[in-house]
Length: 439
Image (cartoon, rainbow, N blue to C red; front, top):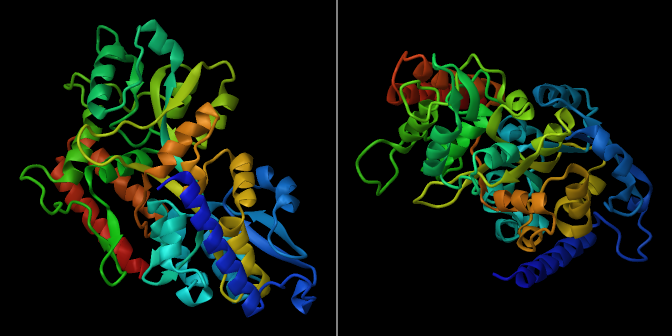
């Protein structure tokens, strides 16, 4: 579908939603003079950094005489703070959160049903496929805003010194690159690493990286069944797959191989400094991390000569990426529900200007298909756009706990406690327990 067609569809849907909201009395019609147009300040909680957005709040168009007040919350505190606020009747009106917290926050959010003038077909037409994690049956838990896709940062000086002209775009190429670039002394000590893979403790975003490999292999980790209930599918065989190693086992074995001294592409171990520091100091050639790391790298070392590229893909199969999708949800029993409901639509759906403003503030791509289809003239943002379009996700029952499950899975293989197959089985059982606790 062409960009113009996508944009046109979006305009018609937006007009329909706004009309429905006017008819329902959520927002005043032109010249309507409704009492609902009295000045209202909506309280917004979110995990996005407040230092970037606070000074820009007045620039958002979210309804007649409606303003926003933003309070930043740590991801680890958001769930319990929101539950306490609801219990004491002091809850915010809106909450902006990453998809990883959807399972833990869902019961605190007002579900948008088809009767509200925006259905799941509209949702699919508007947002990237990965954002459908916010859809359950005919209900929409939250409206997507931004995507923080995984990308691959690369050290330009290292590539120049090695006379390498192409950034690896497949995992097979990454293996060859690692064999060529990783430097070791006579005793096998790693002096300069090609890429940080294979461990957990000193690899920033290792859970994101492993999620990326699993999704590319066709394993959805935790997904909804036909009834919308979260089910652990980690380690399941893919229907129609040829006999051989299951996708999850293959992904974990590949990941772990980079910390195996016997392998020719051995490039990482636990004695090295954290991957973020190693890259910033010029000791790591390739660094897999979210798009949001771009400015952090620059602040850590303004003199680092680096660039960004899409994450590598499998040579055969559908391209896929992992990323964090931020969405805005309407808090149940919002004290200003009649204004919060349309404001959420204005932030996410009804206003391209609001979405562009969010992109500019956080330097992250929109979750909207019409904006992504137009591309970006910024050479860095264009890579982020490409990564956002193919971003996929999985239902995380408890982000902190599942990180520990992934950490154990990686550690057990790394130190030869068990093989990849048994590590997957152990992780699957642990995830089932977490999913059951969350239901």
